[in-house]
Length: 389
Image (cartoon, rainbow, N blue to C red; front, side):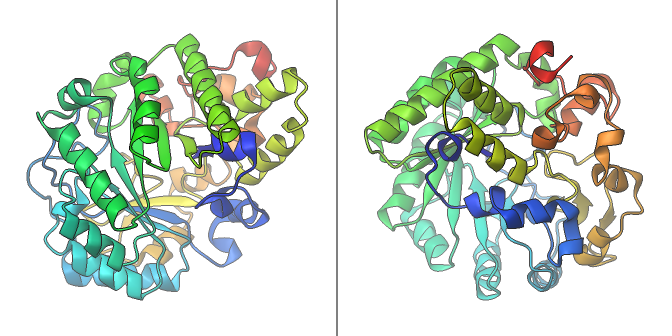
């Protein structure tokens, strides 16, 4: 994640300590520093929607997901491993029958919980239970205004249900925000999303770059162009600065493309902005893509992956070994490579002058586009001059 608000304005929000501090820099060495990675856990594959870009290829029914007993053992291991945060996702996590039992148990263990949901199942009662369980943040996915979102997510009424879910969270004091995946079909909706978060008093929005994974692989040709990505970042930056000037507390982030951080830095540098040096320092702390190092994922079946978008590579299964043990074992060539990736990166990524800030970006996009896990990420929109070629 790249906090555009943090970079441009210096304001501190939830999660910034995990991304932009000396301790986050130390975490680049993985388990060697004494605690585990941030973990994304897809607690079920079942979902009531069928989104075109779903990286998990979610479906109407669950897979061979972990039992409650197995899930509790996994949570105990994560707590002992001192993971900084646990992201619950799916499928649709709220649809899992023992969802509230799991978040209550995790909360009692002191795990820092966030929830990624489509929001359509968050009734007032569900919102209160989520709040009472101690969930720190709820991210609700919307991919545009009513017609575009519903078409993209395969269900008429999904927009209205998700928006009501957000309102239900706000009404009980549960921190909530939007998740928006940018693609060719909804690029023109970014301005509308900014208007929505202001009108509805939503404090946070995350703009995701398209992941070429799951059903998202089929949409790789629907990604926006380099020129459009730059224009989108310009729009996002301008809205962040506008909020800051007006004193509105809105946190704006981008996800799954570390070119964004370099782009912000270069833009400040070219205009001789004094904040450029601080932005460079923060980006060095962040270290770019940390999949397989400070970020890991576990799917519904208990398989361990480098991140939630890289389900094609598996390091082990928590039914056979604890997550903490699997994560400490760098015997898998992909795991070993991710922890010392810079010598393996090829093409523009391998030659880029900003590797310490980006760290090779998304390996899953590279593999999907080129058939080579260590090839250049095709979603990097920095030009050759900017990256030092």
